[in-house]
Image (cartoon, rainbow, N blue to C red; front, side):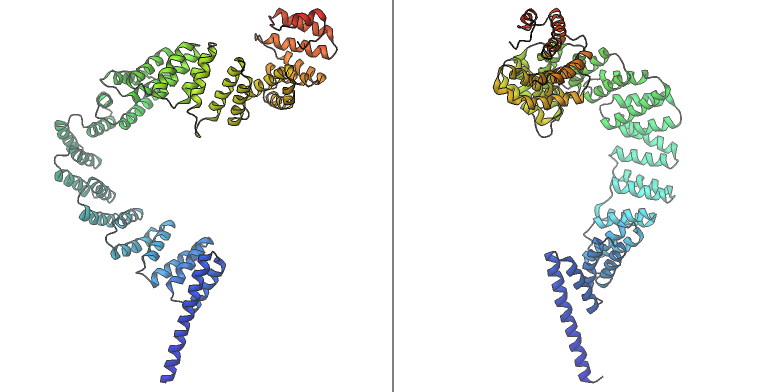
Length: 566
């Protein structure tokens, strides 16, 4: 080729590179603007201009990933890494792609190359170890652990991992030797000696393992690891008495972690269930509570086990009392005691328990609720209102809407009984904001609105609202006499007498022996009177009087034989 030809070729290559640079820069601009279609087309044109452009492959790979084209994504990332193996971003992306595809064998050389480029990234060795394990190349996994050991020194974690790898390879001798080496390097750490014994046991060298266990216990009689290992061994040999003795020793030891004790108890419970005898488990719990400074959590588990076994509540109550002696801040135990006292209708006990709970668990709404309800049941309205108002002070966005709703509902009832109508209605509004289908609140709110409308013309405008609330209760519980009566009475107040008669008849059909029946029966008389059936009305009014109605106009209605508002 002539010199002119070379010059022309060089000039053409230069023009192509210049064009490539312009298109690539524009692709990045469009990508930054979010114009991905344009960027995608520009990048593809870049590869037409320069098929060796690693960066174009890499960015196109990102678009193929977004398009869910996994094959092209991998192919383009792989090509980018081949063209620029020194680019860590490309290599890391390729390794991650292989790992996501569970192609661990392909990921290994990529990770190895990354580590060779920067040996300060120790985490890459950890990844390599995991990958070699995944493909079953335990020898390579051990080689990686050797590198980590050279960097960090011998440690429990690395020695255990190496021993496990040797075991996987069937090299029992090396597995044991690894743990023996660790124990010798740290002769004052009995736990490492215990691990050595455990490895001996796992690899069939039982006598040597037991001898090692004896050495550990001679120095550290309460070594929980060895005691657990010995218990497992004696269970496997069906040495029941020895295994049971070790179980008890572990459960009563203050050196054993709570998680280990729970593990042991679960095993004992499973065994007792299989045998159909809970005596041993109950005895173990009793002994655990009899030690100095017992663990409150074990006492809670004891009470839970007794509940599961449906043991007498008095027995469970004694254990829960013991929990509070050990840990008076234990809210769950106290709440269970509150539940028992509530079931026994012991409101004084409920109040006392909740008063104490508020000292230790001031943010637990349930205690304010039960205390307020207990005072309410005792007709101590001011004390009940105070408890509920204090409880509202601990409400937050995570509070149980049902409990908060009930707080406000009962507050509304109390405020109404105290003659504070506006405050009561505000409480009901708050109740329904937390739980719009609080049926009890809807009924009382609707009824009290209708009562006020009887004497206050301004309240008559709210009868429609009261009717809507009351109708929800009837739909929810169509056989509830109280709700049916409320709805019938509101219809009566709206002078819809025929409709009111339909619902009061249903209320009468669903009456029980409640002391509140006199009100419903008197309402029936009023509704029948306005439906021009005065004889039936008189029958109902007489029944209401016999049942102790406190209505101030009932006698006059009977005497005058007509409905009277007041």
